[in-house]
Length: 547
Image 1 (cartoon, rainbow, N blue to C red):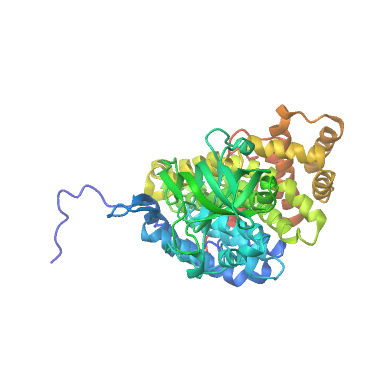
Image 2 (cartoon, rainbow, N blue to C red):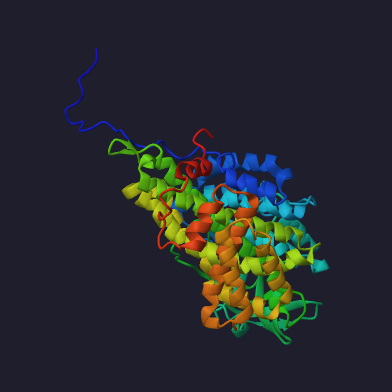
């Protein structure tokens, strides 16, 4: 017998999109697939396809748990011994183990095939969409490898950082199959001005061995097996590897003071630390700390760009997923012309960010053998890091608005993305630092300037709007003295030109709309594409409904 509907049931749940989890982040992203193939990573399509499935399902769900329970600092054990460890939700370790096993932190160094850096960049892009906080230790572990390889005594550290093993146990490096690494550069009084650091490094009897005394105001990934830090040695600011545990098994002499209470990035721990005579080994020459660590910073800045592009992609995917299923005023949201304009504009921005990030990854991949690509990577990393990271907060907010109130609650993931969005523009050098670096390269590094101009010139003749913008940029660079106060304007113009250049040469279906909306008549907010823009085609490309 069918029972009547209880009188207290006020409504039937209807017009609600299906849960997002279960997406294939590789299969549904044509722009990423094309960029990886275009930039030399086609040989790695199979592992990328596999990781795309993981990132959109198991890792996506684990990300919610890893952020729901934040890391907890344990300074002492029950008996009162100093331990300075950080406890995480098991989902954090699941995310780290899966990423490390699949090469997110090491494929660039494990494979000798051309395109390995591009494939590793794509792995990072996919992982970051599922859970951004774990990208911090993965990025630093990846970027530290070429720095550690400079010192023969640290060969084991470099090898185990690159290996596809994750081991969270607090043991000496010799007892672990794989390790993770962090960084410590920032001090209270200096911030970006690391030459103002006061932490001292006193030489010991052993070759390259020192004692560190001082502090770090931001000590990234305090649960790591070791950290690259900057300190003042007798010969000036120098770079050091400071292990968590010494070879004998004894804990090193440092105290974690507290974890930072951050706006976002909740799954990941950042801390303050005091060095109390901690043992460390010098990496590079005394007084060359910045020069030594700059290779690592170049790689972490690329990952900032990748992370920002990944956040755009996930926010766009969430918005499209919702708009294709939710109905209002008699039709699906995506069928409303103005909503389609907003979504298409977001799709254009996302593809441009992805395309530029992968182009820079190719330059990094080719840099050891190609001086021109090395010079291009040098300046394009700073340009892209500034611009792509700056575009994310407004982008995520626009995606939130596509969901309405649902985009403001945690179940949608968009609040987490919105909290995360500002981080990459701050980490590894703020926007001003990047723009000043661009001016420095343009003024003092002829190779970087020439490489940039060659890159931009390769797209000349494809689109009249691009040609006009390029001519204007060339006039400014050739005839005007570059002023510090104009650094952001110059960097932004170069960034959009670079994105347009990549899209035009790739023959992307969104290239013309990008040029019209970013170069010819720059928009004030998203959703201001020309009414005759191919909105439907752009949206199908952004996330094929059948994929």
